[in-house]
Amino acid sequence: MDYTITLTDTEVKALEYIAADPKEWITNAAQTRARRSIAEILPLLTAHCNTNSIQLAVGEDAQVTQAYSLGVIKKASQVTSSTK
Image 1 (tube, rainbow, N blue to C red):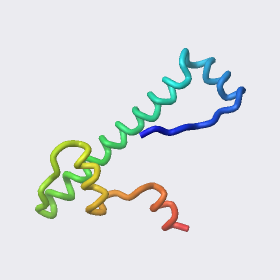
Image 2 (image 1 turned 180 degrees about the vertical axis):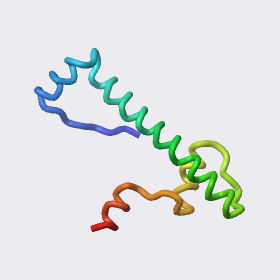
Image 3 (image 1 turned 90 degrees about the vertical axis):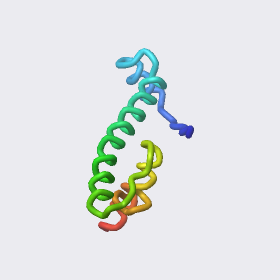
Image 4 (image 1 turned 45 degrees about the vertical axis):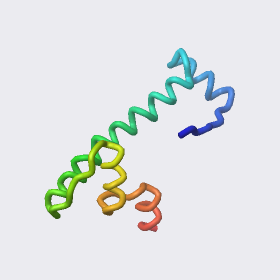
């Protein structure tokens, strides 16, 4: 999936101070955070499936999808909106 962001000239200059390639840095930051989220989600799903005798989906992609479909996890936007 592709995402497009807009940065000001100052924001680009600031990123160039810490990264040789700002686009690469942004991509790496997003991918790293996504991997961390997957590492948090999988044990939650496994515990839920074991407790409820539910067959665990095969593969990380399917397991993240299963975690959503079983209600083990919710999108942050759903959690935030339900607390308002």
